[in-house]
Image (cartoon, rainbow, N blue to C red):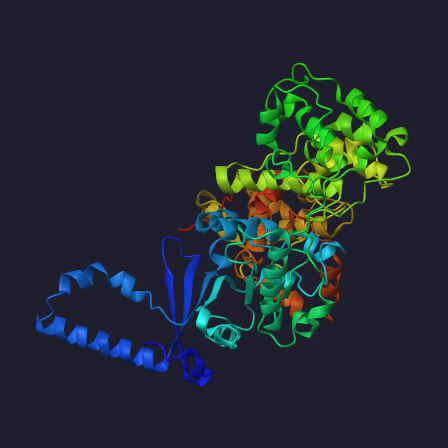
Length: 582
């Protein structure tokens, strides 16, 4: 029996850990149990006696014990912490699918913060708003993630410091190393039967517990992170100076369960047979979502049957109530946000007209649950679609269709950006690149010169001049990479090699530029954070080095680690060719 809570003392507690991997080696389930020492001693004594009876064959309940062995492993203490340990090096390229396989909460965590490689999304590093306090950055790309799913203390032992003490035991255990990060989504167990005020109060208390124990917010998301490194910026940020999240805010007292942008496609299907509706809450939000060309869902570029053209509907609503074009639904989304996510180009253009928008602009509004502008809402939705296709459906990444890019172009132009022509913009953004002028970089080529990427049928031809010619092609690739405003595509490197006399012996003996490019891209991937991370680690260590400084100054792109796309774009094809073995 647990001792009376009135006589409780933390010194009387002991912790034990279990860490089990199941089907996926990239994830293990970690469980910390806090017991009173006397309870643990009694439990271990009973287990020992049971083992002795089994060995002697005198345990009448032996069969029943076997049935419940797994349950016996789940030690019930006075407090528990349940967590996932996520080893990203074992799931680079399938991080989001791995998170989805484990739980709904991990799926939401994964898609909010990371890409398919477990790399922090660019907005949490570069965007002045979304990065929040900025105390977490690209260091989150390294190390093991320990995701705390639950911290539970038995009611009679609460408010005695036990929960915080248990977290410290986790931090100081072998399961959390200096370069690892502990992440949690603080939320009450079951807030369904609480009113708004009660839910907010309980949410604040739960967050305060994690803040008290060293956690700080990652960007402006609901997720809080903890670094074991005492010099990490998050450890120096005073809790009261951290930013808030808008995720739990409500922006309208009117409830409209149908108007939920997070399930837009389902909502649009529900609305297809409805006519234009000036009644009810948020008529403009609903009509913009429903009055989107069916082409977006696989049909022809025609309006749904029986619909008033959206430009006319917006004008009609505006004439009736001008303020409605800037109204917010419960999630804080304006009609312009809905038009952007619904990829309704005509609605976007109409809402941006001075006679409709008036002096008020919603282009830069972030006062919504996701803290996104209309442009970000569109671009993040596009990105999520690609992530879902790759992670859940196994689809190969496809270029974005023209229509959403045209919508993004319209929004950027209205925001005053110099976006060039629509043709140039679509070409640049076709694959979801987030920066202009990003030139592919390569790591230093040392050690093996990559001759194992030459097919075996050419090995009899390999001699000193062949090897030197191969090395010359590698040098041509470096030249192409270091030339400003030049993308090292296959044809360009072929042209360089064709005029390089040192590469001639290699080319004459049927050597191809593709073999050298295959080696470079494979080597770059192996040194990236997707495999061993050595290149990034070297750049972080040599911060005073000129090359390191140039590397740190490079802009971050959503496709920096999308080696399959890089291979396809430069003309190699998506699949790695070499190396070959004898």
